[in-house]
Length: 234
Length: 297
Image 1: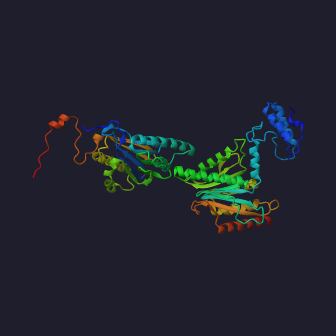
Image 2: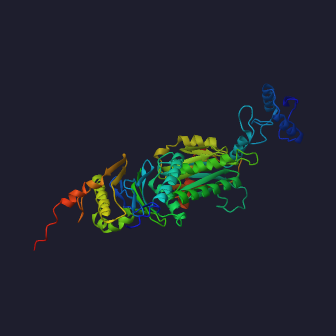
Image 3: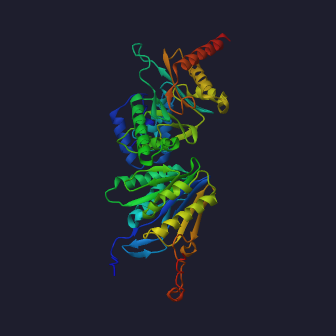
């Protein structure tokens, strides 16, 4: 048997996605937190709130990303009080970037900041490992994102509706879960626009099945007693 | 200890023995009725128009019995002695103008600037002690820079004015620091549009449509109130400010003055800039003509 290495630091293999649409943003993530080969949490929430109107998707080291989010939430809270109005997405992204860049030797976390403010509307900022900050119409991150670059090149378009954007995110996370061993569980989405924030939940067994994926089974006996696959017809 | 009412204080004189007695007197609890009587008497006997807070005006960390901090009020007087500074918020931007009294004919025109850029999108016009003003401008520049480096975005004008006001106020809290002897008009253009703030030596900062500090501030405020600012563009505003400054310049008391103006508006691409020379000349001519018309009446 493979060594499970239960003492390994918790890492979120992860698939995280942030997408802008006409009027706001949709953030999405899987829910697997692994400790080596063991799934420490199969229903984690990787989309974390920073302010009322800004959320962040976390990937990489679970501890590092949590601590960074906690610090930035604290700074943004103070900033909001001083400013007298909600913080902008740009400022939130910059605060995360300051921490990520200045502590790059010690941190291992890739983040996607997404939110809505009254000046710029819906915005997505990707902050990968070294502490770069890049404003993008859509961003993907985590180990599962490798399988999505081509997909997004083909499937993303400008000025989608809210429903189109959310369906795109769910489909993409689901595709990544199918291929990436470090991503799995459920799909969580967060929709942020001028009206507020909506959180949605898509259980893993309700997701669409992709190429060569098997139906989820309730019992092993069902698999054993099932008829074998049909021989290929010539 | 005798109450101060028995002594006649010649105005302007400063005897060490006086101060020693009154300083030590403050530490002991006195009959508050006698104390206030003493103050009133010295006010009447003084030939100055303003009140002297004898004994309570030595330190900025001392309140007078009627709740005033005299050192801060004296600092405001330093501002009142300087050339007028005017700022207005037009519908598309901010215009600021300074009546720069020329101390010597040998000064180069354009030197001794009273209006400074604090950041690309904000500028400050200073009235009062010039050296103090330089400190405030330096602090404002530094605050604007540090905000941008931490938050990644240009500092909102409201935030900048609060930080500057907080710094000015800081210098009214400790006995080993004196208050700033200058007032500042801060004009900026950010995501929320053009905004105008005024920061006084006490550390108070308010947002204004039109503000004036210095010698002719009362007259300037009256003139500003006559203007319809919400319908005025900055180009028209420049002419109006020039007219106001020319009008309230007192030829008898102060000899020559130089007009310094700046603006932040759509035309200047929302950046703080000196008013272009041709527009400035146009404004000066218009102001002089307006003056002559008034004199002709």
